[in-house]
Image (tube, rainbow, N blue to C red):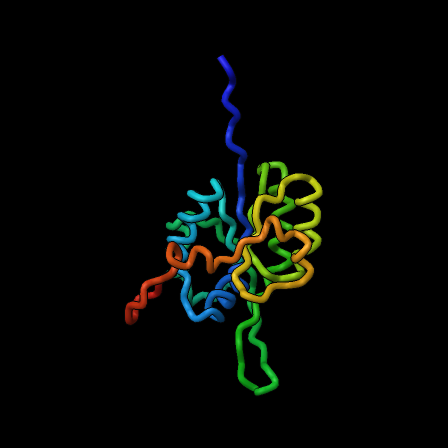
Length: 175
């Protein structure tokens, strides 16, 4: 009797701000519940780490994301000012995502990276050199040219729009 090969253990590492802003820039909203299901069904993701800035007033969102199956990794946020003097929240998760991808390195066989940010080039390069890069899901129509050499691994989230788009219901967040 032939042994059946076990499915590879796949983890996803998601830059939530890049994902959210990238999808919004295309004029639609992501349903995080549907996105988690897509990661699980299409890429056999067993753990999806979502790197997100922590804002206390978003507690119900964080609870919902955890109920959907995400492992949340929080980054403290800063209140920053733009040239327009308008305040905005800044919570860059790049270092946390790379660090956790390496902390978890022995626990997964393949990784799905969700970002279009070139700051992750070193991580993508390393994972690819080790045979652990499964996919890069880019949420933007324009993504960093540093990732272009990994084109065979890149898929744009817009290909899955019909499966992961949020409903436009008044007052009810879709993610």
